[in-house]
Length: 259
Image (cartoon, rainbow, N blue to C red):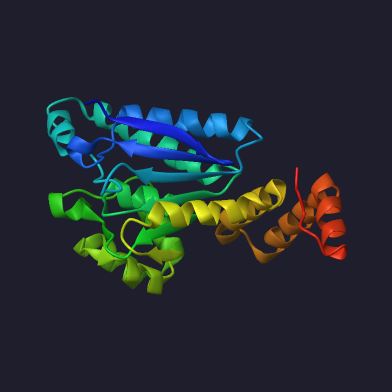
């Protein structure tokens, strides 16, 4: 069975399911391309307010296909570079996507699977989920933005431990580190992620897009630059129709229904 990225809808949420059960949902070029295409479609569709990424069955994603990597060792380095660039296009699409993206993790999130979860805005994980930066175990270094995400999320010493030792880490410990947002009983990650998505779907999409952009840009900005960006986003959002809807609803003590 060929690897694929299945796309379905749950209300205003697009659900992307990594499907490669024979290889524990290992990633490949066809999934990268489908991921970028799906996010482009979701960005154009005003009815879609959020995206959930999950894996088929009991595993989120085992990372890269090691058999394909072995084969690529016999080919020019440019072949693997092209494959990594395709994966990175998907990661960049997630990070720059103007709507919330939630990872729903059951079972293992290994290697690039862990990196993929880190690229999302939220991580919901089952209590028996296992995360492992498996790269150094097979003599490799990370890709898919793992070092970027971890270096921004925790002290260097903790990031070094996760990446260099490549030890299996449970969802509870990652929640203590501030990496995982919600821990659920086994089998409940997708339902919890969809519940979180429904809460986000009720908020003004333009405001959420601003928050995502501001949070992404903040570490590289000086305080002055960040204050200027916050000013510009605030003014733009104040003059958006959704601010009128939100303020009127708050003053009227009724739920807002944003455009």
